[in-house]
Length: 257
Image 1 (spheres, rainbow, N blue to C red):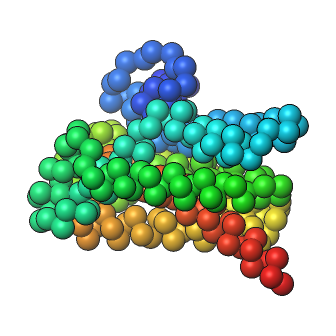
Image 2 (image 1 turned 60 degrees about the vertical axis):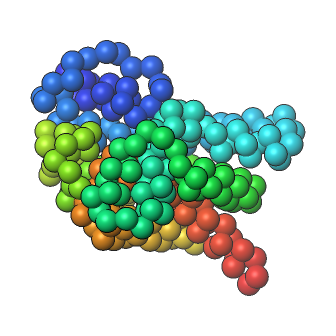
């Protein structure tokens, strides 16, 4: 039990700005970190749902509602996953050999393509969230648990781009089978919960999640030979845009019928 508690605190201290009780970063304590990583998504989803309810109750206008809804995940995570998206954008846009792309991932400076990607990403997210209302918000809040469940699964399953780095370190010390089973259970629970709330919307979210996950694997393997922390962060950011986008498209199709 103490080991699980320590793994929980490591997960929250590493991947969020939420308060976490300090603990030793030992190999034993890192075995189950990815089991608790998705719990951060539960917190984000709850905050998003609470804010949407409060905004509606107080009659807060759409622009402010959308902006804060968009920034809650960034505030909770500290932008760590968004950083991976921007680093990956620079690396992918360089059209350089794999070794050079890996160097660009490690570069702390933001290039032009990172800035362009960040701008496009937030504009797209704003537009999508403006359409996520009513019943849709109840499905949307599953986004953050789903994305982190898939991400945790990938950390202990996908080949690594490098033997060094955070992802490689977590994977090396992780209880692989337990984490895989736990993440699959999270995904199944999300799927059942969303389906019960609305079969069509729930299916659309799962399709969006699956498409983003397949893209993540193929992109990482083709261009980097595996995953690392930046690529995992890139996937998380992309999936959290693709899933609500799939949700909005499904809603638009239903309205046409």
